[in-house]
Length: 346
Image (tube, rainbow, N blue to C red):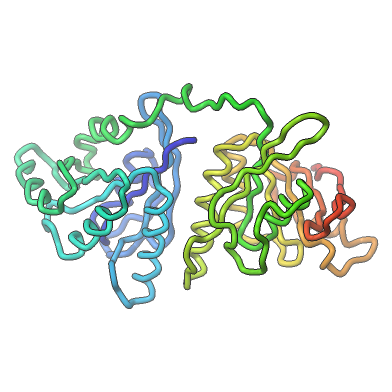
């Protein structure tokens, strides 16, 4: 599975500029206004035959009561929780600030690999400005200019030193791996339970019941199939977009491991932006895809309902309208609760 690196730092230190520099695109919003990055951005980067996922977070402001700052703090905390390593970005022009020191204290306790990155070092004469960041207690700082590109190649060599080459990422496990992917509370764990015929997962109406990604084994026609269920939130988030962020991040991890992704939708609630975002991630990873419209038993229907739903879904999927759709009632204990529909065709 590709490593996940999260860029974390206080507002306006150049996180989005560094993100864009590494990916070679201008996807993140870059502005002098602190907190311009409201949403997290994800990107897949490759350097010297090594692939990793990069996350750009909003500015991290510890202990703030402001709603917006609390939102981006939660996002950064989730990114920290899920990342394999952290790029802690600081600003050479301002020097260490009290907020930098608070963030550093949090990172020291996280036990994650932390790369201390001093931004805005535009020339060798300014290298001396990095020395003041030793007081953060995070080891040797690495100096870059995200805007000008100075030292970025050496920096990428450093942060990818512990990542294996792409050819070494391939798993030896030859079993078919199905990723059960979707937003919280759409019935992913119920679907796993229905497929294997026993309550492998804890299922409640509370979103995020599944705490960790859990693999289950389905034996079918003398073959073993690995079912990967994405986990839910570790903590209760008060901000809806952070629930979406967490589910997307976990979906990315699941996509990397699976051969075929089963995108579970809530048939009652319909399709929203988050579902489409996850679907795009699956398509970009070139995984086989099946859509499972779950909770079909709860939908009021007649002989035209399935066809109308399928046509509506097709209009939303657009270039992905080839993906087959299954109408599913995962809460039903018997396999007869699954109803197959033909794939959507153009």
